[in-house]
Image 1 (cartoon, one colour):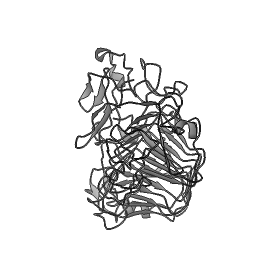
Image 2: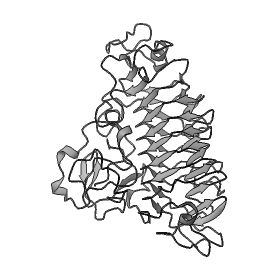
Image 3: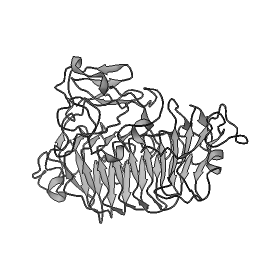
Image 4: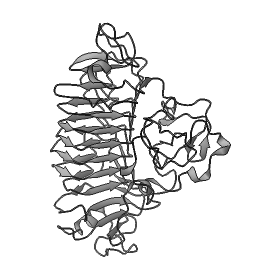
Length: 455
């Protein structure tokens, strides 16, 4: 399977609009890709993404949904009419105010231009249901941004059954204001195919338990501190197919890339974690994933990588009350420059922390410098996991290009680019997982790492 494009700009293929296979039904490592054995000449044009982020992420809204269109350039909050694209609202907040307190239909707030909206959008006070959800999404050809200059949280969510699709949520450089904040306990919300960058924390859910939260297909990058903080508790979290990179690279007060507390059976599948929390000097705050009082955490088909040489850098830290699902297999780790400074760990290489004590990774399990290995303590990464360079195309670029190399080619805005080598993530996911939406020939096996199918 040829790795799919994971460039920052989701407008590479046009704008945002809908329909492909909903991400929520795809398995851990499914993507529209080609096998590493495929020649460049054999790549079918049917594999070239023809739609954009929202097209590939959003469950299709019913034809009876009420649409509220938004255009900063041509809209007017005073004259806007629901269902009339020629009479849009000028602000997202104005359209949101037109949504009834109790939804009697599916409501879709669709942003139809590529403007920057200097707003503080607060989705609260709405009674939704699974059959009458609320969408905030982009339109085909649009690439809107919510950025209020750091004067407040760009997007706050306190409602249930709310989907945010294809938006860019950002703040000014070095902001301390978080990007998306769940300000209360919520149920059945989804963040799909957004770009969340240049905030304090990218996503913060510390205020209450998030039940059945799906975070899928997003690029969460270059936030000042953590990418995702879910310390208020979660039940049924699905974190899938995200690119989580370069968060916490400048502020020593950063937290982990993903900070989980009181999570019940979260599924962390098919994500790429790269160069997160490297500014921290604490092994407690430096992990890509920190797990506290959380049970049955499933980590499968992910890529974890950093070129940090800090002795305090950790890959995954499991603290008091945390447990790993033994089905956590088929992950790839690459921390070639980490020197841990602990007596029972290798001088350099991948390292973990279980209960506060370093537990280094040994491919295939076994003892680790005289102490039990990560596998021995957790049961994870015994099958199909590996330590290897993921062979990103240009991880040091600005922006970084985290496509994986493939001799079958990786996708760019200009088409397929054939590489001289093939990444070890290609066709290396759990063979029991279905390939999903990938057209053949696809190597008959899923990849590991992020899979954002529109790019």
